[in-house]
Amino acid sequence: MAQQPIIEIAEFPHDSRLWRIDYLGTITFELQRNNNMMIEVILRPVSDSTTADFSQYIKFQVVNPEWKEHRKIAVDIGLLPILTIGSLWKNGVLLPKNAISKILTLDNLDINNEQARFTNSNDEINYTFTPTYTNNKFNIKTESKVGKLISRGYFAIESSDLISYLVILHKNYTDGIIFPVIEIIRFYYACSTNLAHLAFSTPDNLSTIFYETDDKNNKVIIYLPQKYTDNEAFILARILSSDVAFQGFTSIKNAIEIASINSQNQNALPQFKTHFPFSEPTNLTVRGISIHNRFLVTQICSCSAPFPNVAVIRHNDGRKANPETDIADDDKKPYQRQQPTATTDDDLAIQNQDESAYSNQPLRLELNMNCFDDLNNKQIEKLDKPFNQYQAKQRIISKNIQATGLGVD
Image 1 (cartoon, rainbow, N blue to C red):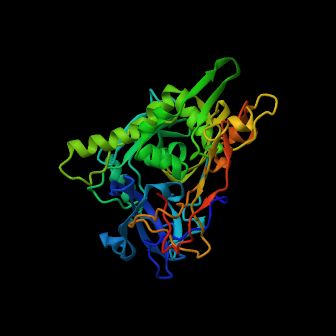
Image 2 (image 1 turned 120 degrees about the vertical axis):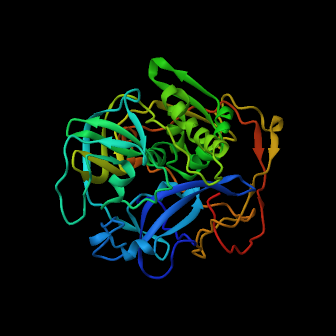
Image 3 (image 1 turned 60 degrees about the horizontal axis):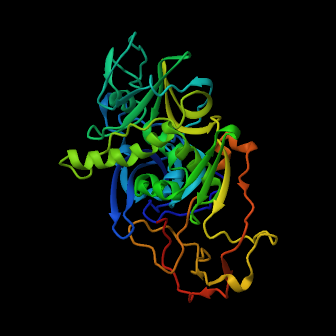
């Protein structure tokens, strides 16, 4: 994620200690003006010697003192692209290293969404053997819940938290590759601030994005609103042109609404049923932990699944039109673009609990193109602009207002 800006999250601990993200929890919404969702981040302090220790208990069932200090902090869903399990933070700033060092390359992994199995932290898992590991690191019985599997020596998740997982079979891991569904969402659907807000808060806005498909050239022509970047057009084009991706995307908000309707607890954790946005063999590079005959994924690092070719027609396209087809200047309407002041010169922390000022542009995390192998050889095609309907006038510059905090809404 080297292309992302160095940011500071105001709500994260600022005590000069090392803090690690253990998991992502409850989804809520608190910023009423923009109806933005908040996601609960579970952090705990670690030391240089315990960065990879996720256990809740140590010997003789004594609670780990570091786990006793864990915190649950709600941040804006727009930060989800950088909220990876195992990431390390100091004074609210993301560090370049990760607590989990195991990298696994899954070649030709068969992503068959019809055969993949959903489970959660209360489901029973049957084992074909009884582990004999000692030192209280494993101690898994013949039948155990996923939550116990993860909490005993790996991830300490409170029993009230029902975490959704997607299990895919693999030849080297007979009991499957276990993907937290929130990680599938983070990597494939909510991989930028704009897309995270779209997926969790306003998925209905997809209906306002017009597109055409050119099956002969495997191309999607997308009429892209100004707020979305060219790179995000690749993600949007795949979602709009693929039934599998579209269903996976829209199921995110559906799960949140179902959880809010069916549960007495307004902070109930939604049981996400989101699939991969494709269904075919692919190469995946993941970070995680091997647990006997299964592999628990904590972060998807890269994927080779194909994208369609994309041609973009912009709303409010600022390019000059083809002079041979452009209309006369006298026939163009005057247009003045208001330019709000947006600056990070003061190196401010991101405030998640307060509304952003209207006069300041919010900070946005951009799509990390390096995560998708197929995009290394693809570029957005910009179609010729036949004419300009508007003629630019002098910009209106709003007065410079001293900001007290940045936001991602």
